[in-house]
Image (cartoon, rainbow, N blue to C red):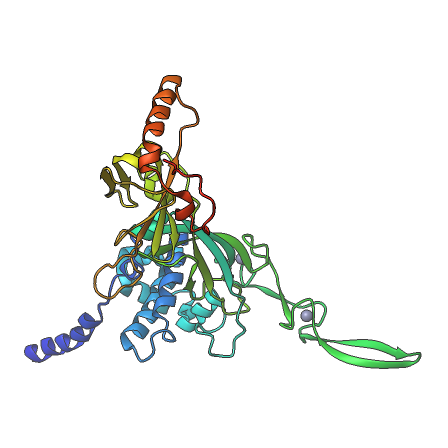
Length: 410
Ligand SMILES: [Zn+2]
Ligand SMILES: [Zn+2]
């Protein structure tokens, strides 16, 4: 008999053990110090992530969706939260069964639609709010190395104090205009003595038949408020300029519609010399065109003509690209050098990173003025050599044969 009863207890205990599900705080990725705001934020994020509309045929996700709603509802209420912190789930369950408001347990979908309006994915014929577009500017080096960016968007959100009801305490009055009908009759005169009666939605209560008794103190009965929300974006290596990233259901919220999408356009920030070392790289001033980068390098007359120079370009991630010419190697003005593999990484390239080219254009700067002695010496050299080694400008320019000056120019 003793054995039987202990077996029975075991049988009762077992399913309980299996069901001893995750801690409510853990479920919401929060700790015990979480504020009401944290709770709401966590709920908004997770409920959307696990919504069955987004995870069709995924039992685990559906279960999680229900649990998140449960966790949220228990913790957002200061009374049940206190009980939960002391006695855990069992305590809350007992309280809900015996407490003042036993019907407190909501349908998780109901809770969700109070937050987001409609039914999640918007398949239920719900009106959809407008999309929102924002633009964020990211420095070129982040497109090169990849980076996480945080940005803030000010948008309309459903008031979380009243959960979009506009009411401080949930109490409602019968609408004074329509007397609870939601409709009013309007008389319109078509011609003298001829009236038309029209039934119209009550403009005071919006057809609900009742009005809020005490307006929510946070939103003033508007049901929505403006709030800054922080988002994160992963700028991927080589992401194209102007790429649009969609955050589903993150546009302006309203209890009357399913929020549209927030579309973030990622553009390039104009280069500027900053304080930080990484803001002082040559690479910040590269210009990007697709997968290629462009750079203009300045050479002196001596360097362009005589060679024997070196430049160390610091690339966007700080690595050095060396440009150089040996003595005697001439660089023509506006000559272009293509440095293979030093361009942008190719976005989402299948096997390993692949890069575009770095295109270097050389600009030659002549000295404005020459020292008197130097000028004389140069003049002597030109005179000595121009007849022998000169360039035939007429021929080099491809002009038709004409009377030539007889000697070339050095
Ligand atoms: Zn409110
Ligand atoms: Zn009314």
